[in-house]
Image 1 (cartoon, rainbow, N blue to C red):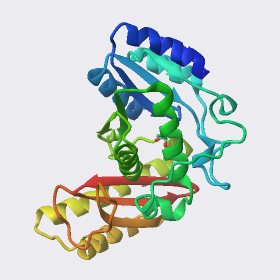
Image 2 (cartoon, rainbow, N blue to C red):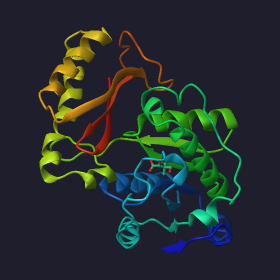
Image 3 (tube, rainbow, N blue to C red):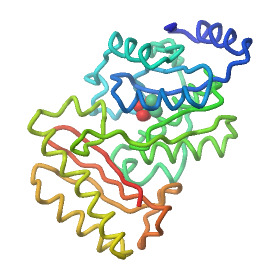
Length: 280
Ligand code: PAF
């Protein structure tokens, strides 16, 4: 497995793969890889011949008071994990190598970026869409795999690909969870062992929504109230938002139309911000 840090080296490695008629799959990451990322890489392996994993902590998707500087950087471990699951190439540019010093071009995916996380992290999805567009241009993959844990991110990227005609198939891959239901996330590293136990209330609360839906409840307000009640049993969880939305448009839904909706939340547990969602 090769590791490259610049666009010319990336292009050279990809030219070789393309000359051998290999289809290219991309898994964009910010590193600090865990089993969730590995399942994305395995999925990309199943869908393409040559898998590129990008590892880039993207400064433009962090707000001024967010965790950009403390975001865990674990390149040696990440490299070993990529090797283990059969990635073919790591692209790990420096900020200086990837963004022009006076970069002034942004991809803004309007409306769909505004609610949910967009409300609390202004500019976040502009940073995500821009860096993903840059990665698509650099790698030119046929397939790109993203985790469904980042529900709104996936919707934003799907919309961008549709609107800008990127010739890439986007695959949303299922969330990998701990045995107690917690969604794997690089930010789980910030949690204390005590907080990790408490975080199990998050997926448990989302399951309440599913149970109510199965019992015939379709009113979002009723479902959301029950989920909120469940979350309130763990007082250290401070809810930031909780909503039932259409999975593609991120529009808030007053009634659940099964198969098209998801329940999504963001909360703080101690100093850590966590997100999760469940298809309904
Ligand atoms: O999901 C992530 O890790 C990031 O938002 C992504 C897609 C790699 C863009 O920086």
